[in-house]
Amino acid sequence: MEKEEDRQEYVLNDVGVIYNGEFNNVTVRSWNYGQFEQGVLDACLLVLDTAKVPLVFRGNATEVVRQGSALMNAQDDDGVLVGNWSGEYSTGTSPTAWTGSTEILLKYASEGASPVAFAQCWVFAGVLNTFLRCLGLPARVITNFCSAHDNTGNLKTDIELDEDGKVDKGKTRDSIWNYHCWNEVYMKRTDLPEKYWGWQVVDSTPQETSDGLYRCGPTSVSALKEGELSYQFDSRFVFAELNSDVIYHQSDENGKSKIIYVDTAYVGRLIVTKKRNSNEYEDITSSYKYPEASLKEREAMQMAESRGVPTRDYFPFTEAGVDIELQADVIKMGEDFKLNINIKNQTTEKCNIHIALTGCVVFYTGVTSSVFKFENKDATVEPSQTETVQISIQAVEYMRNLVEQSNLLFVVYGNVEELNQSLSTMRVVTLRPPELTIQVTGTPQVGTELMVNVEFLNPYNFILKNVQLRLDGPGLIKTKLKKYRQIFPGGSIKYKESIIPQVHGKKTLIACLDCSALRQVTNQIEIDVLKAMDKLVTRETDKEKERVVENENNNP
Figure (cartoon, rainbow, N blue to C red):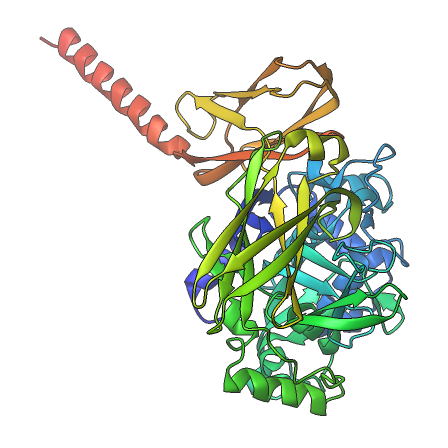
């Protein structure tokens, strides 16, 4: 890695930002990588020692990265973290409650290399990022929005609808994650042509086995873009996460299923990482794939097919000439809202369209928890015009069914009467949680006490029980955990803590509130800490002035 600016960000920066939410409503959470915190390097070496990674492998970046991918999860080798997507975390810590890697790695080490419970994709990615940076490997966390989990690697994600256009939960087994986090590591791959060196995908979330262990990568980002899937490791699986087609099937009254619509653009909609020297995200989608329907994109797909990816046997697919799009504003959890269905008629004929909308509560992995709404609408759209159908969503409909991270999935099925053709689309709405406020008073200076105030108000009509509040920040404070038995409706908590900064420069203080009824309540504040020397110089100057005055008084 040639640029010093890159090395500062991807090796030395000990705090980062991990992006989640949905592709058109990206949300953030800061993460304490803490690779320089006391005990973290020892913990990272313990991970390698516990797994008996041969010393001969430890000088090979590709081997260290591949071993690290397997060792971050405890799926089959007693690694660092236990994955859990069940919603039941009473025997450990909820994945959404963590604020960084330091607490996890120190707990792993202090408990005799015992796996830490629990983690989901961003936690695996955050801890692997710490592991890699700690060992001097440039690394960053990536978020892929609309990420397909393609077990078969056939580039197909199937959505099943019944004869009325309602999502058939029993038959729909494939899932598209709202987002999925993995890592990139910057490295020379002597086992690849030089043009495929640089950023490599590595993923420690246990999804599929690779050479007998739950791990993924490293695989070249540049090779993925070109559809060159013949090189190691696990390129086909990652390619499918980015390029699967969403295929909508509908069953008739006899149960016979047929393809009614294919969406080639939904998966891999947006791929982001943290910008250097900024908390804003950088859109790196173009590093992974060419523009949809471009000549280069078709060539990359042809290359992938020549490397063993199944051909798209459902093409050519006749388009209806009518498009539908779902729109919603940013919605706070507990609010009523309107969902707009925009119907665009690109034909020269007036068309009548019947619409069926299914509203589901889903986990962020795309798995449906429950269906809370089904509504039919009819619309007439003039040639070359757009009509908007509005559907009201009441909080009472979805609140009682919500699961962690508060995601709603809306699937729209439309049938164009004149053409007897069907189309479909879907949209995830991530409900925004209430605010957690952080305030700091005092002069931010190494060795000088600061007061931190964290406040939260429960805006709901239900009690929040067994609430955890974490405060964290490398160079500022070791992870602090405060527990509250309950917060009543309309009730608030005010947590005060004194901190004494240990390191100068820009630091980030992270707060996170978590309980079973409310997840992803986070906030962060940047603090520019002055050197202790600055204050020391002032004191010395004052003392020198006092001595000068004293000398003048003694020697008039």
